[in-house]
Image 1 (spheres, one colour):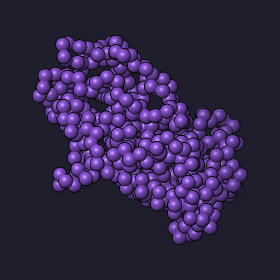
Image 2: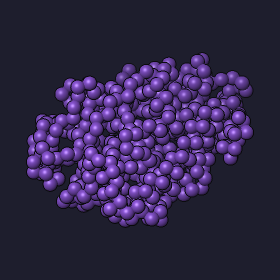
Image 3: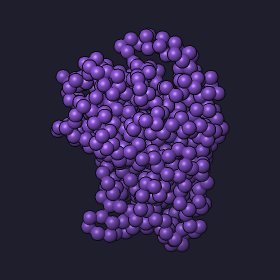
Length: 501
């Protein structure tokens, strides 16, 4: 949920079988759906509402249910009258959906404030970024050989294949499962990467164990709070990027969500959906959503429903499936808890081996997999609104820092990291899947015209991954509704698209 950069490496982009028969008829042939519900108003849900409006037109009523704040895991906290990202904070230059959202909404790119990164092993800084790019490359080569080159070539190859999704979606093609989507992009290789540990794939590439321990592991710790045993595809998504290719939205990334809902002319219902059940009337299938809000309990019928919120028990969605035949099994797996602490204070640079804070040159510090370390990263952060004269606070000054850790920091840990501090605001996130806690990928189609967006997170959790999934579900729902089977799960799409042109 945070973003840190090392030479040639940056945080970036930092389902199983369907239940039932997706061809079950809904309304009479040719009639559009009357009402569509989206549960969840994070980036996935808000993007889904936007794409559904695009494909189904202006006459369809789109309701979006959100029990918390619009934006979901895109959120901010306020320190000294300035807002700071406490959730998803960076977007990559190749995130084409997010770029298009910002353009359509008239939002602005946040000005980038440069800062150097280091890796700390609990005793000393073992890797640091300098002002000289060539020196950084030489140090990487001297310490790790050509491991960083092998990594870069691997990531670039994966990204080149992944970028095909934009062309497929632009031509209207959809996929009924995450496996089908990945297979269309990278064949069985991509699917195997969701089942194989990142460390194994990198070692097979010839990447050294030292490079994995000192570079790859710190990036995985800050990005997913987990180690290099996460699936290779998840790791590739996290590593796919280069320096200076990251950006954010001026005023906060969560503005994209509220903007998309407004552009979609969606009805936002501040309510928690408690249960969903199928309602049959002859051949007509609809879904009844029962919900609670500040004004009491209610229920509504919908022709199409998209669930854009995690359904695993550990997240506590509170959503029950009633009267389904066969009954739904609980989705396996769990979500990983990560704590983001926004601290206003003076960083204790002595902890990192710099007794004089004026000599501490780093804006962010990543950490290796070291048992004694109680945090994953600490970074000086900038507000979501950056004025023309803004400058990053120096370590000897009181600044605002974001600390990622597995558990909430106690007072002694805060005093270890900070000489003194004025405030510490804690946000506990069920931020991403606990990779390895589930075999396989969750389904996209739960039941006819009932879709699940968050299964994509088990292949890679990022804003753009959710946006890709949103576009796919909107296309899939449209094609299923109109029985356009030739637009779903087609093989050899690159050749097919060339033939169309």
